[in-house]
Image (cartoon, rainbow, N blue to C red; front, side, top):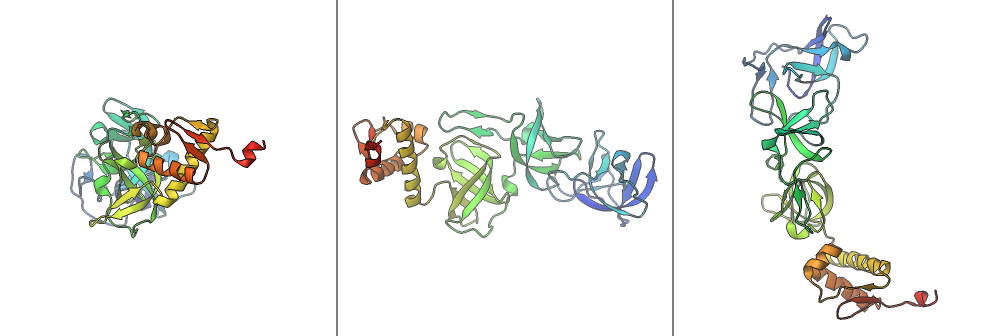
Length: 319
């Protein structure tokens, strides 16, 4: 059996002027259809070409290879939708989820670089929008050339390899993480009202609530966070913040650095507008108040009606 869009270990059956014809040892019988592919599932699963042999084009034939020798090849469809073998290793195989780069944008979809001569098609109906969201401005956009985002490879109804951005339902629950575990994840979907959906380890369900999103985020971004909760169904809720006492230190350090860069005065206080604080510091007003409260207790700032002012330390006075 020769699997489509998978690596196959095949033997050289015969040599021709066009290249090598490769085949498996099996003598399986396949269902016939117009694309010479026998179907198993709509998306994911296994697909087999009807022919018992597949061509490895002459330009890819290794020197000195003879009949009966085995080669590991990837089988896909050429520009005329004929099954063909290649020694190249693509960036993705059938049913896998990987991050691929957009090479070309068209009116019917985009073409992705998957490491083979013929680019992988991502139909318009399989795209997600937005692929980028900025909570500070509310701006959103769709896919553009040179974007990189996670997709899954599947076989469409016409028998051709294609990509989909709709990978969320193909993730798994579980993974062994517990509350407060550090995780790395890839952004796979953005809902400006609910939050950001992620694939933890490119495999497991995860979600970051929208209240945690302070900066621009795009599908394909790698994020680092911690598990804030494990749901009953095994899916993860992810927080981008540290535990509160660690986060307060980080926020206080950031504000103090900005205060010094501004010459010792920042026109923000505990009475400032929450949206202005979020836009400038990428933190909530509550986090801002806790941070400047810490700086005040440490004797580093004074909090005035409309501003915070750095208190000169001894080392500053001696300069």
